Length: 431
Ligand code: SDX
Image (cartoon, rainbow, N blue to C red; front, side, top):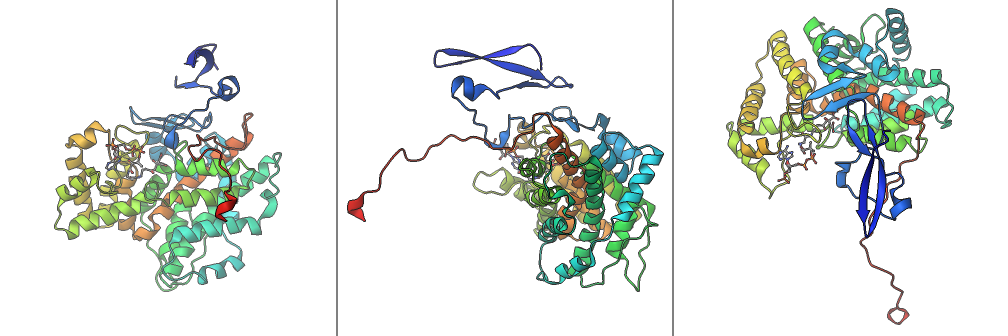
């Protein structure tokens, strides 16, 4: 909080509004007393200009294309750490020492299995069940097997929360792989303690009793990079959902299950699946890029250029840059040529030369190239948003923890501006 005050003049009165400044000099107006002082509330569709909290987890600068977790640039984290270390950094606030990393990995391994009874849940979903529906249902079901957090105690011991965090990070990976195996009618492959987080996931996804999966270091590195790039992104739609649900003192599992549902949306994490379908349509349509560009610009259609644009980034999403580079490395490592990559690069080039996109600051976001890598690894497009959830989980947990430990903790309950009918009465003569 600074000593600075902003002044608001409203209907002949002047109200002083405290000014706050973040560690990166972001300026905010603290309107927590506004209604008490003036009777007025603020209206901000989509919370475009509204901060819901003060947070020390992730910093974004949309104009400069900066993304940092606990102060560390995303480029360094993606280059120098693996996903398990970044998950620890987000949840605990520091990069783990060798000893802390050993403890954390042991905890993740210890909690990598799901209760055998949960295996049966998979068999009762219809064949075409979307894995995001399964993921959310399985995560909220974990709270029935591990009730220790469901007492909603504000003073829940830290070690209970850290155990639940490790349990969730490890089990979500198992649930994701099992949902894929179920969708292809193959037997589940169990996690192994001798494999790293990403190698374990790839093994559970792609090995089978008759065909061991051939681990390639480049693919394991690409998987680590993708999960790190999705790990947190301050108050995006799904993270805000986790915080909002958590603000009612809901346990971690149920709060994360709600975040999974929000992430599923095609305007959010579901965009990575929409990008591939958009690129496939362009290819089927003879590679007609300008038709897609025109459709995306038209106000007559809901169609958007998926993987383009962002609420915060009005310049290149730093994550998209890293993923685009990794695309070429993975295609080389898997010896695959993917015509969709050529279409994607042509589409990017055409859009970035089009005034409509340039004037609105619309650039490729994290979802534009990620699907091409997932596809090259062998992950089907229905699983792309599941991969996003796997990466985002440590961020959701860190933000849920930070919210419940915040001295300003309050249940989230926005106000509204009522525009409906004024007072009226039932006309008995009409009854
Ligand atoms: C993610 O918040 C996060 O951090 C999210 C995320 C994370 O890590 O959690 O980064 C992950 O969700 C990335 C975004 C994935 N979604 C998509 O790729 C879907 C396509 N993108 C758009 O729907 C849109 O850009 C959003 C949803 C991402 C952002 O929407 P905003 O901030 O509400 O912007 P807007 O809709 O007000 O757009 C401003 C203008 C509008 O035109 P005008 O009314 O000014 O004429 O830009 C246009 C929009 O029509 N526009 C697009 C467009 N995105 C915005 N036009 C065509 N194609 C697009 N992709």
